[in-house]
Amino acid sequence: MPTQISESEQLQLIEKLDIFRIKGRDKRGRSILRIIAKFFPARIVSVDALRKHLEEKIFPELEKKPFAVLYVHTGVQRCENFPGISAVRSIYDAIPINVKRNLEAVYFLHPGLQARLFLATFGRFLFTGGVYGKLKYVSRLDYLWEHVRRSEIEVPEFVYDHDEDLEDRPMMDYGLESDHPRVYDAPAVDSPVSMYSMRCIS
Image 1 (cartoon, rainbow, N blue to C red):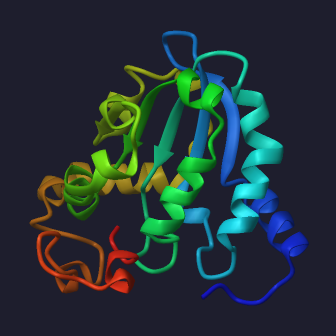
Image 2: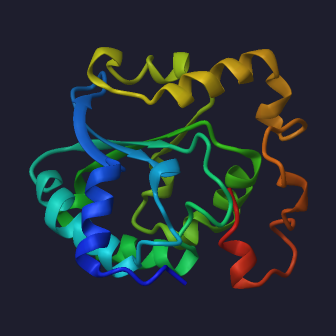
C-alpha cells in the first residue's frame, strides 16, 4: 500500500523526480518519451496519482505525432519501483487510443532476466493492440545509440555505471551473475505465485 500522502503531494513528487520526460528523437525522427523506472516511488505514489499525471502532463503531448518510448530499467529494485501487474494494466487501459496508435517503438534498456521472462510470459496479455510486438530489448548503451540520437537524450550517470559493469561482467546479461542482492530469491515465472510476489519482479 502506498504511504498516505495527499494526491497533490504525490503529483509534485512525480514532477520533481523527473520520471517521465518528452525530449529528443530517435534516428527515425520520432519524439522520445524517456522513463526512468528507478525513480518511480511505488510505495508512495498511488496508481490514481500516476494516471492523473500522465493524463495531464504526458498524454496530450503524444497525441499529435508518432513517438517512441525509452524505458530505462537500470537499477530497478523489486517491491520499490514496480506498482504491480493490475496497476500497469490499469495505466495501459487509460492511454488514449490516439496515443496508442502513435506509439511505434519501445526501447527497453538493460532488461534483467526476470523482466525478460515476465514479459515473455505475460506481455501479450498485458499489452494488447500490438504494443508487445514493438518492444525492443537493448542490453547496452552502445546499441541504444544505434537507434536514438545520443546528443538529444539525457541518461543518468548510474546508467553509464551499470553499463560498464555489464562490460566487465557479461554473464549478468544472462542472469548467471547479478549485483541484485535477492535475485535468486525470486520465484520462477511459471510457478504459482501470489500477486504480492508478482509485484516484486525486476
